[in-house]
Image 1: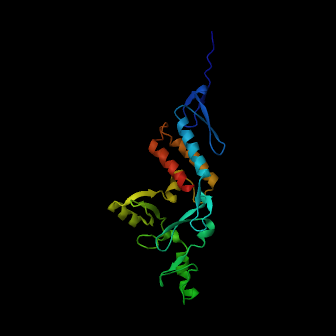
Image 2: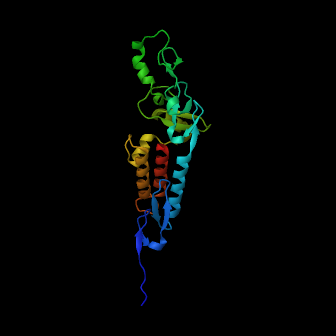
Amino acid sequence: MAVVDERRERCDGCGNTVPLESLTTVTMPDGERLACCGNCEPHAREAATKLGSLERSQDTCDGCRSEFPANDLEDVVLTDGTVVTCCPTCLEEVPRQDRSSGVANPDGAGAGSTAGDTESESTELATPRQLCSQCHEWVREELYHVTTIDDRTEEMCSDCKAVAEHKGVVKRVRMRRAEAREILRVPETASTQEIREAFLTQIKHAHPDRKSGSESAFKLVKEAYDRLR
């Protein structure tokens, strides 16, 4: 009597046990090899392509006009509401506005003022990402990066975002970093490697072929990783 080889292994995507010959190896950009069944293979290859493109993506700093890896750049809202993308060096040179004089001042002090008069204000103005470009109020929350229907980009506080959405002028709202960290379950101090490892773990749980996953959860995890990258 012939003996049937029934070797079976677990799919790294959905977690189901399938015949060994049904599994396909998908290599991620960091070298990790995933064994995937026929249903999971397309999703794994899509994730690998996405990760690879993110690692290769470059963008231009609006300050020095040099190219940097996209994840090294940061969006900053200036005192006039303009949003610019800066490298770490240019970020330190972002002009700040002395609200008593209304004049942009890179040193954070207005003409004729003393260090004692501006010390507390300079400390607050040193965090330009917390200045809402709509109400021009300083807030402690992380701002929303909003694209309007006329393709303008704004950094809005929660209240201004809600008003803009009510008026129907919001085209797209980028996920906040705090929300992305919550989805991937990583701390604010997580390294690039820790974020990638968390993504690979969460993307498996969110896979549509798993009971714990769905198409929307899968996309949400990818969006969270894109945001932190």
